[in-house]
Image (cartoon, rainbow, N blue to C red; front, side, top):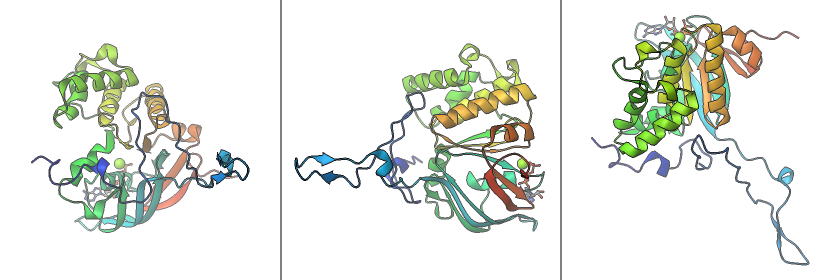
Length: 293
Ligand SMILES: Nc1ncnc2c1ncn2[C@@H]1O[C@H](COP(=O)(O)OP(=O)(O)OP(=O)(O)O)[C@@H](O)[C@H]1O
Ligand SMILES: [Mg+2]
């Protein structure tokens, strides 16, 4: 089935989550200069020319939302209540750590976001899609808006670094010349140009994870979701992977990352969403553990 025929491409349709979609620039272009609305522009009484107010006089633009969950619950078929009453809003451009003890529901939350599992109750919006009302062909489109990174890399062992990254573009029928340019750009971004022809077994754990991150970026996603991406890596290499995710975030991609890495979370002072027994118990900028004043 060709997904392109039944409905307009997602990029041509308005997001279902409100807000005006602005065109994103490619990752290696300089950061976009934000379009400033000219609300409040007044004709000057003496010259008739339009006077645009200074930026700090303008109303703040409404942030667009990458992820919105409202009263989300997940009960697995065996009766396990993995998530309860989860409310979460992640504006585009955020960097969010998802923390909590083993079994708290972090991976379950991620599986709901990427539509690997369906919620039992509540509303989920991701990258403009209402996950409870996905149309035919929407799932592949949704997945292209999300780059997913796992603890165990999940690379294809017989393919080279270049082929692993290119594969996701080949299956969507991207022209070869464009694939080559995109893969070269992403391998440069993750620092693997020299390893392009090596297979996963010839790479270090950190290099394998960087390959997986390059693969996650092939469709220039709005959102990167990473489930314990540093779980198999030693501390120094973990920091390299985190720096790479921070760089990707700086370039405009929203990042949501589940982790047990207390040192990294505490050092970075980013937004931390903590789950316990399926509920969000904390959502604030701070460390891995609650900061007591
Ligand atoms: N497919 C499933 N069927 C039934 N129960 C499940 C399933 N997947 C997860 N669970 C249960 O749901 C709860 C949440 O699991 P989840 O994998 O989301 O936790 P987690 O926070 O990611 O833990 P960890 O830090 O160990 O990865 C756990 O009690 C787990 O046993
Ligand atoms: Mg998990």
